[in-house]
Every structure is written in structure tokens, then in C-alpha cells.
Length: 213
Image (cartoon, rainbow, N blue to C red):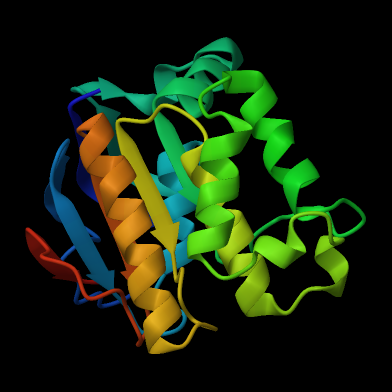
């Protein structure tokens, strides 16, 4: 997939409101290989945008297209393939399984894609300062530690676009920098586009364009 296009898209709940946005009700194109920041205030639909693009929600007006094909035309089998090979999302709420260990959470996805070796994954744990948490249950980890596990999980698959929803909200500057470095290394390796959302603190990256939601 080379592009994600939004055409006059708007959450249904915003219909009839005076919306001032560089995303909603606009023609917007995200290109593969480029890096974008979507800055937002709370309640402006940031996480909804991610859910629309990944196909989890359809309560919007207008159109969202992948390479000029409206995503409403995709069947369940299409979405299964897209989420396995084309799009990866790091959710704001992470959606990890608290009763499983950090590695078990990652293996759930990696065993579907066979994209990374355990040696590569362990190296990421080491760089992120959580090597001692590989076999720890996620429910006993801090939210910042969980954010790093969720990032690793997002990277253990092929993707043309990576979306990360407030990925460093609970990280200090040093760990934010390390996580951003790992993310961009993998995105560049895959030639992928990156869409970062934030309501304040965001990764310091060479963004192609910044949108105000």
C-alpha cells in the first residue's frame, strides 16, 4: 500500500458542529515512506482516526481510501491480511494481555507473521531497558514499561504504515528517544510510512508534515 487518503472524513458525532481541523472535512494524503505528526486536543477524535484507518470503527462520514480504494469495500478476509502485512497500530490503551508475560504478548503476533527472531526481539528489550521484564507478567509492569512492550509488538510484523497513538505519554526523554530510534529504524528498513498522534508530548522526529486535528 502506497497511500492512505481521507476525503471529507468526519466522525458522525461531530456532524453539524463548526469543526476547525486540518484532518476532518479535508482532503488528506499520507504517503508511504513519510513521517507525519497529528497533534490534537483531548476529545477531537485522535484515537477515533486511528480506529477508522485500521477498520475497527465505521461511524464516520466521507471516505477513507487505501490506494484510491474505499476501505468500506474491504471484507473481513481483506482486513485480516491488511492488519497482518500492511498496517500496524500501537493503541493508546496498549491492549496487552495482563495475565501473559511480555514475551508471550509479543509472540502472539510474531508467531502469526514469523517476522522477527527471538534474538532480534531480545535486543530491543535490552535497548529499551526492560530486558529483566521479558518473562514478567505485563499486569505487574508500569505503564511506561508496558508502552515499550507494546511498541515491540507493533514492530514484529511487515507493514507499509505504522500508526502510534500517544506512544511516549509515560516515558522519560531518554527512553522516548530510544523508542523513537528503534521505531524509525524498523520503519525505514521496511520503507514504511509513520503516523504519530499526540495531545502534548510527542516523539522528536523529522516529520514530513504536522497536522492539527
